[in-house]
Length: 353
Image (tube, rainbow, N blue to C red; front, side, top):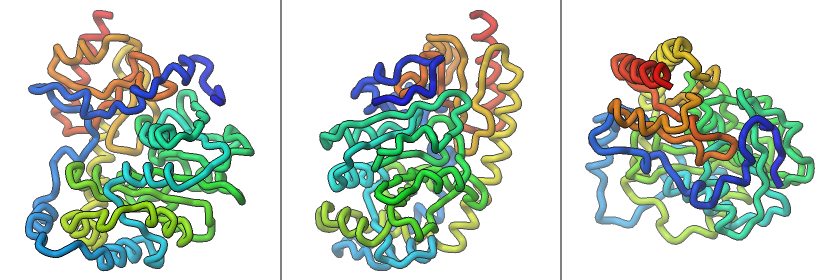
């Protein structure tokens, strides 16, 4: 089942299982400027890296302090928190633990949720949004009892209003919100992580992007106690390493939240500048009001990635996301000088197309 909300784009069913397994790191090219991966470009903050390096590895991991820290950070009791080896493990646990009759994934979005559902043997329906990728809750089939949505969404960088996300919830339905980029917004203004009155609401968070910890594998799930217990039963013993637990505690602190807020404000400034530059590039269509650490744009040049390689840039291809065609690319937000060079390269390429 595919709900066609994108009549001007290729059919979502053209996206294959292999496409769903494609990640931005696969688009990296040695020696080129990396705009393909959307992890914090400055790397892990030195204070956080030092804490992780100094973690005691001689004892088995004790999750309790980290669970308490994450719970306090989101104003929830500890039995509503499950620590995971990154968001990817959370998607797999949900796929293996839930038994939906009709699962629906809202696209374009991060493809791991659908890949995990398919690997677990579930039939997956798609609601494919069209440009500018705003979400209308009415597009979700009433009978859908499991719905996945990203907020802000990868790759569109759209932050759906909290009210829109909450409107997806209804009795008998599980709504899974991937908030891997929620702290890209100052104040996390659209986050639903603190919502505890909707039993079917599941929120997934990751430390990967804001803290540049892709190699550590650290994240967590926020949900009702019965959901958390069900997912925890599917985990092996000691599922999260001691260094990852250290990171969970450290990034939930008041000083870390202040650091993240400063980073989000600087990101917003750099992103606005990039969007303004792209607005002047002939034929390029940029998804408006981006809110994450990247922007999505339609260049209308099918071999744009190859041409950008020749100019020294690696970007994330768009056509492996359901709803996007060749010519769409996702570009990470970097410093002003890098953005200037990237836009100049685009102008040269588009001018020759």
